[in-house]
Length: 71
Image 1: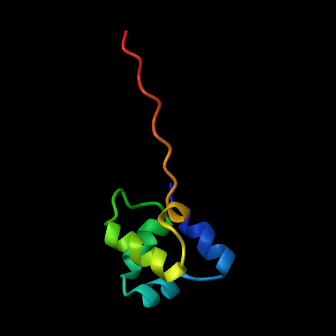
Image 2 (image 1 turned 120 degrees about the vertical axis):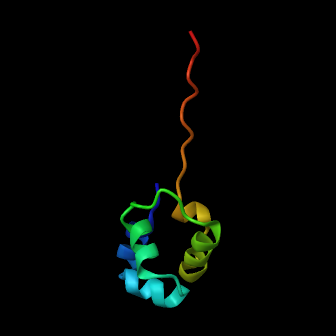
């Protein structure tokens, strides 16, 4: 799960602001913002983090799946 929409909302920033500040396309930022992106390059995430001055763990939360028990 990513927290981009929450972070931008708290800072009153827009997708356009992030696009201009990072040089990334609005479509790329929008897909991440709306959680429509299945994948994202690490360089893309790093650019967003650098622009927002946050760590990657602030942007992306990951909780591992519980291991499945074999019968």
